[in-house]
Amino acid sequence: MNRRSFIRNTFVSMATLLGMSGLSYYYAREIEPEMLRINKEDMIANPIPHSFDGFKIVQFSDTHVGFHYTEEQLIELVSKINELEPDLIVFTGDLIDAPHKYKNTKQISLILHKLKAEYGKYWVYGNHDHGGYGTDLVHEVMEQAHFHLLQNSHIPIQRGQDEIILAGIDDVILGTPDLHATLKDSDEERFTILLAHEPDFADTTVNFPVDVQLSGHSHGGQVRLPFIGHLYTPTYAEKYIQGKYRFKQNNLVLYVNKGIGTTRLPFRFLCKPEIHSYTLKSNQ
Image (tube, rainbow, N blue to C red; front, side, top):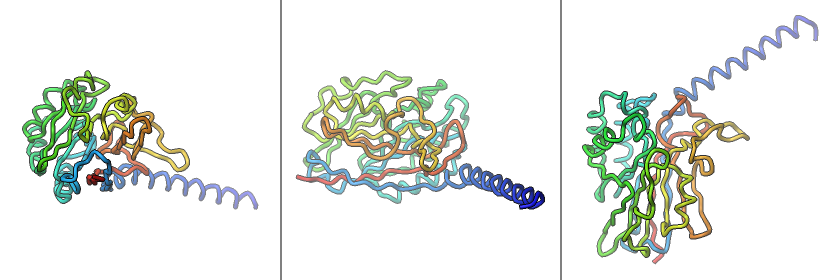
């Protein structure tokens, strides 16, 4: 190869790499964050009563409205969730990225109010909900949207003659989580689902009579590379990043939702946003 050919080939290679970098940047910023995935899972467990067979729970998490996630996108999300015809809807935290800076919170309430579920809508605080002086503000937004807060508390969900337990803890990072208080006076024999924003809290949950923990917070890593995986996850999402985990100690199952929006950086790469749709299956 002569000098001229070497220079030409080097220039072409560099231009190709730069072009690929530009395309990757555009894809990660503009394309993949819009590629919402509906992740359908069957929950199968002995404690699930027969009357709850086929009961559908939809989980969404980490919208981070205001940080490259708009009210128009939230409207589309609500429509997609309603199309799934859930019996119960749960939100596992981080509604607004910076609550104290967001001006149009009333509109968010109006949008979320349109979510429909016969057995109710429930939520727990995430760290962004408590952060930025947002605790009371986010609580008001969700209350106006008819979401019921589970903050170190539980509630029985009754269907026919049977019931299951839905519980939720306060945010681990900026709140005061107390699982003893959360499960106080609950029936240990009942099928119990815990909402906990941070997935690594499962290492505590495993010591309690909980069958399933639903979490978010990790964003699935948000940016993942082939053969490497995620580059970064926040504190309390360093062990359990995305998907399903089973704990042998007491058969606890943890589901980690990759979330809807983005935070810190407005990118998703090989980590599409998702909704979880769980269908309860009874073994009784």
